[in-house]
Length: 456
Ligand code: HEM
Image (cartoon, rainbow, N blue to C red):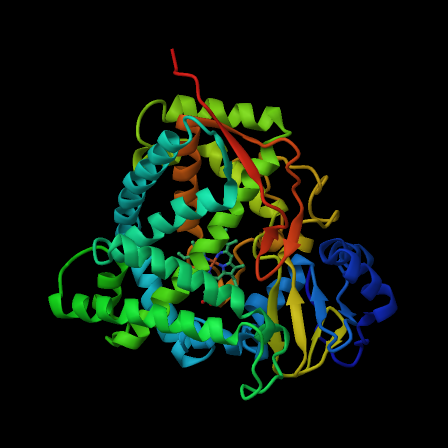
């Protein structure tokens, strides 16, 4: 389908009124969001949520217009990003030349042979962490999924990012400080117009957490620059990296983008892997196929680079997981100049939200979208789908830089866990998504790590 952009024949977007949205929004925000998606039915609408009326975009063709064809007109900035830059600086979370510089450097670091070296580091770290978990849960197999997956993912990310440049104690402090910073920022993001002179809940915790991050990060970066080694940890890679014009990062930029990547990579991965066990718990056909693949491909070995190509079904399950539980459930943009998309006028200066969560539930795009079915991602299927039918990692100039790292890390974590356990949800565990910066489980998810029987 081509997108008509003719201003003369254009019309206003239909607005879904506050009285329609608000009661549902208060009862259950995600259900309300789904109801809004059904009502919009692929059309571009404005959603009246009181203080502002963002455009909501769900159709793949419309998303392509925004994320790729006219990307410069839809900037990933806006008031809601401002507080975030105090934690991650002016590189990745900004737009324009400083973002392009960061993106160029990071793209060169997170590619090709560096990813292979990172995979080897991840493989041994994950195996160690899961073996420790197995030893700890011998007597008491019931655990909190988020706590244990956070342990595994943080340890892995910290090893890949810092190598041996950080002590265990500082690694733990850093993980905690970044967690506090990202969770205490909520009020500022919800009230983007509030001046900084007016204190908001979370401000002090946020400022303390950022100070802790700086106290840990700057000495590591300075020491790595002084030593100038050829090591493969991300700190060293960032210090050595050059963009196309031969420019390199200063210490502040290394610190900022490391923190940015840590934030982008940790919570997303933990949340996705928490959903996994919940999603397959009631689907014996999916789980037994997954177990059989891991048993056949990995068996008793330590999951590593050599197994990845054969963990095909595991990868399909992860793709389907991010279709149904799109951790990045909305992708917001600021509209720069007036535009017309498919006959609908879009006003410059307004906010527009693309929703992977809703795109992934469009009946016109996906067969039985509410059914968890990894076969949609079988190597031979899905050829007739629009490229942007699947938006889990965004698209265009801002597309996720960590999608391959996520897939590799998750294939390794899932297979390392299935080498030791048959995880099941605890009795009475409820799986209820909650909308935050990412789509998270509302309640504690208890996992029972039944030990896997030894293979004959
Ligand atoms: C479940 C895992 C993940 C999901 C669902 C996810 C999703 C996304 C999405 C939707 C975007 C696009 C945002 C936009 O267009 O505004 C994005 C951007 C980004 N992601 Fe991920 N991501 C994941 C894991 C990772 C990992 C592991 C890393 C790093 C190692 C990472 C690094 C980034 C970065 C740096 C960007 C910003 C790129 C830019 O603005 O140029 N992500 N991610």
